[in-house]
Image 1 (cartoon, one colour):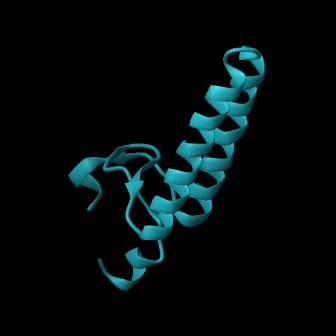
Image 2 (image 1 turned 60 degrees about the vertical axis):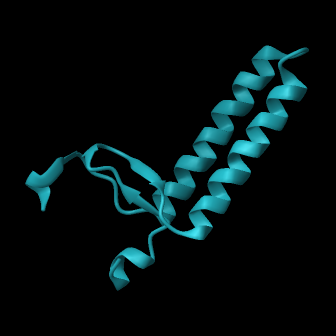
Amino acid sequence: MNNDDERYWFRAKRYGWGWGPPVTWQGWVVFVVWFAVLICAMRYFIPHRLIAFLIFTLVMTLVLVVICYQKGEPPRWRWGDRDE
């Protein structure tokens, strides 16, 4: 990784739009905590309140997208090696 890549927690996907797996320990912490909170919410919400779980999942996903947008490479549509 060069200096420019080190500031990004999430690299852009090679194909399509969005981000791939985390590339720094900070990104991995965000992802693991996000996933753990979602699993805990699943155990709490699903037996009693399915709609509340779906809303919670939507909010958590939006939070993850905002973090990726702020700490990841700028998103744009990519076509693989043709961009480089």
